[in-house]
Amino acid sequence: MDHLWNPWRYKYVTSGEKPPGCVFCHILKGNDDKASYIVLRAQHNFVVLNLYPYTSGHLLIVPYIHESSLAALDDPTTTEMMSLVKRSQRILEGSYKPDGFNIGLNLGSSAGASVAEHVHMHVVPRWNGDSNFVSVIGETRMLPEGLDSSFNRLEKLFQEK
Image (cartoon, rainbow, N blue to C red; front, side, top):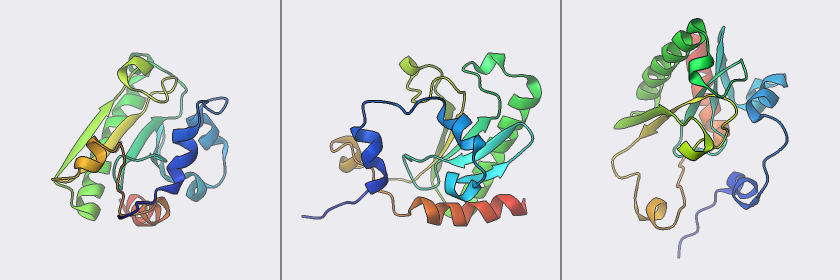
């Protein structure tokens, strides 16, 4: 039998409680973008690796303003958000060569948002066959690349563009 190790998810999947406060606001208060996996700080939003990714390269575009509603964000923030989504897609296409993408928002916990209090957009690279029995039946994700490697790969690409 093969064993799949995904140790960074253990605390997340076994904890019934969320840490106090907003995870995105907490990340922004830190001074170490590498430790927080922030690959880019733009004018109105930042781009960060998802700590609990569906696939390697799973990025989040997050506004600096703490808001739960997309409709409540101002136009400069949402315009930049979409621009960063497009930029993220181009960078991931060049670096990871995925077969497709899932790009979107989950607004509210009933819609699947695990951080419902702070709007964020997902950019998830996908490959043919990445939804195999392990993900579907075993509720386990197989990630070929750790977060540190993903950060090192993507951060320099975001700085070049």
